[in-house]
Image (cartoon, rainbow, N blue to C red; front, side):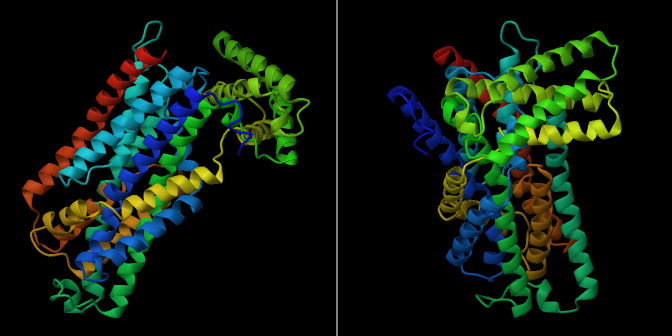
Length: 471
């Protein structure tokens, strides 16, 4: 740990601490903003007392961050323009991070204050797009260029479809339960403080646990990605590459450079623009080969060259990925497979997160869950439908949310816990013929529609302001 922060000046240290506090603050707000959805059903079906449910959810969120991997974190990072990801200037990186975090946190706090279950995922992705578009508006740039629109399309489709899936599947699951399970008390509102039947109570507690765990593994990864952007931008010598790589992994990364270099030498292409891009990759491979050639362990890479290694790895991977997807890179099947595996070995240098980052993000998310949950819980439990939530409705909505969010985390798609769960509750209300409260649904829908453009505008303006101040 000490080696990672070696040589840090007082000014840079203060900037680092402030940035990290804002990042952990975002996850804290995310905890009580989004995770409240996970506990709403168990509280309103009397399956668990509020504080028991909240503490259980906080613990599961904490654990979910550790087990969830880094797929969503990397998806979030790669939404940013490659230019910003490979920029070695502390000022530009800090302007990017501060604008992202402040825009997302301010919008989350505002919607939480009014009890509106808006999406932290939409907020963060909107902020990232706002920064990318604002950067493309600067002199010497083409408007919209540099933004990873392919990744934006994938993420946008996941965010668009997830509430529709939540609404439809939860409604269908409730209707199926009515046909298969003929127990009238499951479809009535709880009486007083009486808990549900033991078996349905077990399902509700299990799904609350599952949604909380899935939320940690999905939304927690977003915080991990942001913290890594901060560390790589402000302390590149300590975090630009993974200093914890073993000697065998380091040898694999060095061998990957040779594999890619040899493969590209025989690539079949006659298009001048493709050949020009391959020549750029060749130059970056030569630079990597010179830097990594004598390094047995990552810490043997000179500190002043570590960000250059990161830049070369990202540029090589980005260019080869685009050429492969467009069909411009023609390689024999076996060689194409080797290049794909070599790219994965090379990314071991840059795609990582230290355990202490996971711990701090997990702790922020878990504590946040236990603090400000009540406003959103009341909206989900009382204000979406015209009638009280029944046991079967709670179980249906939670089962669908747990499955959808868990699968999305595994696929690296940052979906919205808020959208899936609240739309699931709305779906069960329609299936139950309980009706929806139009005013609440309109407010939630308005927050959903406004979140993306509002966070884009706010982050874009903040980025231009911070860039003028820091660069």
